[in-house]
Image (cartoon, rainbow, N blue to C red; front, side):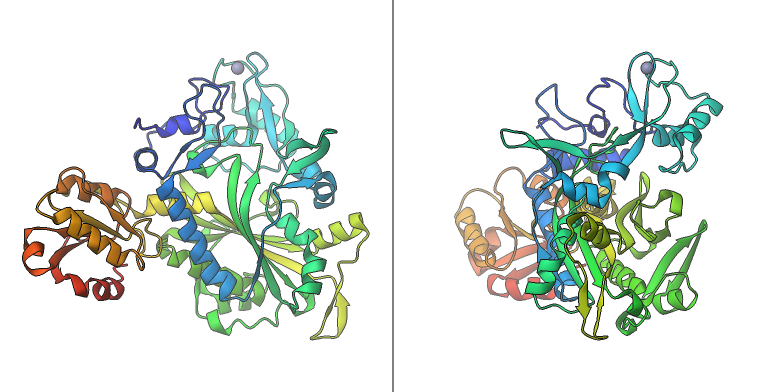
Length: 511
Ligand SMILES: [Zn+2]
């Protein structure tokens, strides 16, 4: 299979040779993209056609397995342990929903168009790339014009000046039915959670505070998607909306996580404070917010993100989403810089009051603990699945040139394949015996059988998809029913009787 360079991944469809990506070589980024495409993780959609669209990606079997495993950990760690409810809403919703949510008016980015060649790009990102300074996405249009002028920024394609900055709404519009009724692809999964809130509260016997979760696809008509899975137009999200009585936001029981250390990034400084201190020192708004930030951190630790690569960045008003009163971006450090994986937004009653007003339905509910009718507030954990998956790939990626191998050291719960089984050679009954071992392990572990190529090549292929263990059936196996198990992380091999394998695999969790 032809491997695809990451620079192609970020190219806008109308820009031929030009890429908005940073020019400097990003070797890890390119290598991860290359292995991702050649080992069945992900690659650009409709790559065989010249009118392929930027910002759309396909998951192959290993990518899908990794994605499903991430969602599995999310469900176990957050939905199940926190007694949340999960729903599955539609991707296309009527216009009223996004009028009420404010997206049709406010969900936009600053767009600039070249006066000569018509090249279109995001004003904030282009200025940021050239000046190497943080540029907020919510400045007045005139401010971008001034910055472009001041820094003498011209079209990267034809060196002409840009027209005045405009706002570009990122909602992807569609027409439903023969009359093409105006409708939109959702830009976040949570709107159906808000719209369904009165019914869920009535029918699911829940009490405040409680969370409703949803995972699925969302669509954003980005001006210039780039950097592979990092900025796409079709995105997988995993979102959690916690509904609570605003008067009781600080009565929340923080005890189970009060010692959890939060890496807080505020006013250009990183400080590590316990979640309990973060509330006492007024860094974080409330115990409820501190609780869920702590649980989010614990979730990402389970995914194998190293603690020293994560932080919660306080987002200033200028950069906050239009519906948020307080935002903490959960970010991890990758080769492209600090990457936001999850936006933690205090949405107040913005959404429920918006839908209440527009639909003329009551969204007020009785909070039994105080015996009063209230309109709940919402705190959300809105995480990108694709970005999370990319960050895991990059942060677990290792090159070991001495042994001529590259590996993804995924945690056991994430590995697309946990155990690979090989016959040393394709004769003397070794394949048959290997298939028996495969059948023995298959009910309990994610297994893969491979008999093609040299044993060394088979090991390397499994290393590249992060397989935890490789089991080899060899001449000795035929004599005494013992096999060898090779550990991915240190390449040590031990010999075990076949009937001891399951025990061994269950006990050695590796990482
Ligand atoms: Zn131009």
